[in-house]
Length: 195
Image (cartoon, rainbow, N blue to C red; front, top):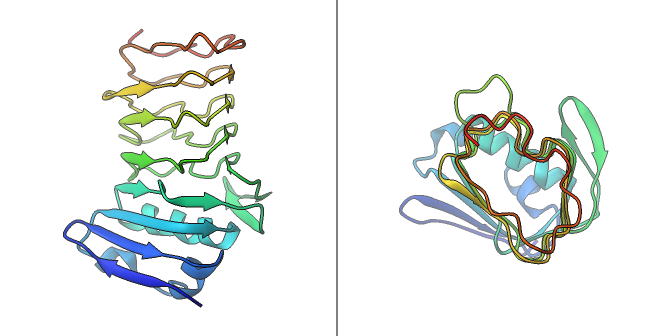
């Protein structure tokens, strides 16, 4: 296993060589004892890694940096009490839902799709404060960012083609610019309270 973990001032960095490295290295880790507030994971990620990352964020970390990570199609993850198959370059259905601690995320650079309810966060006082999607993202699923605060804004890039119904519902989003490349966005802003 070629892994490296290091603590920086406010960031805990884990560099994985193989999918599954993070899950194996941190199978019993109590993240609530960490001083850092940001978790940065680089390298390939499988379903077991996603499950451990969910645990780390739900118990402690408020920021997640996956900018140098690669989501693989290996394994399964659990979200919203269901099991889902991993899909390459996809933040799948319910993958990071109901993570009230998560205020900021850096998305994987090659991300192509954000699934339905991926960051769905009802009954929460906070959740994501901002979203900045990489230019590689082509679609956002329905209710993907619903119930998130998003008070610091949303950045969507040219190349995005589809925004699902109510993708930003029940947020306090104040403004959003829809790229010209979007061909389908029916109801994407339904119930966004501040628009």
